[in-house]
Image (cartoon, rainbow, N blue to C red; front, side, top):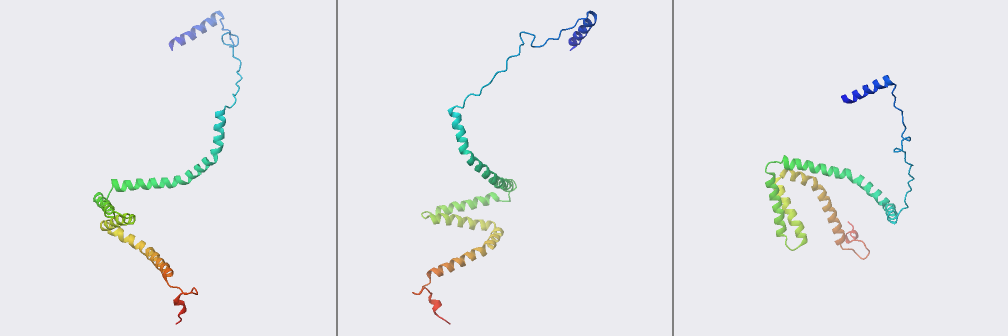
Length: 187
């Protein structure tokens, strides 16, 4: 740094004493630094591969738009599912209730026991494990079982009444006129 300052003042001294000036040169005056001619770049003709890729892009464009719209619709749902999974993880695995793992193990074991007992029929393989797991879960969590039973009891009763009415309608004997025997008897 000091040497640059010294050179500057030395140059200034010689310039003032002897009238020494540097001629300003342009880059074009120097033979080494001639400016090159501007190149004329010509775009090469599109090859067969580029044409096929362009055609493929045009064909796939509507589908990519559809996929982007679908992802836009599903993204909030997936994010809420991930958030509920994180919340469940925090509640069940980090702040779990007392004896949670033992209860979950017994409930899972009753499901496996139901699979073992339901050899043979596919219907049994659906009903036995689900039924045994429901019974064991209701033994460990009676308040939740009562709440679920109360909330679904009315709807199950309504479905049962409708099913009974449909079965009665199908199984009731009808006369040749198309009217049922109950309709013919008048009080």
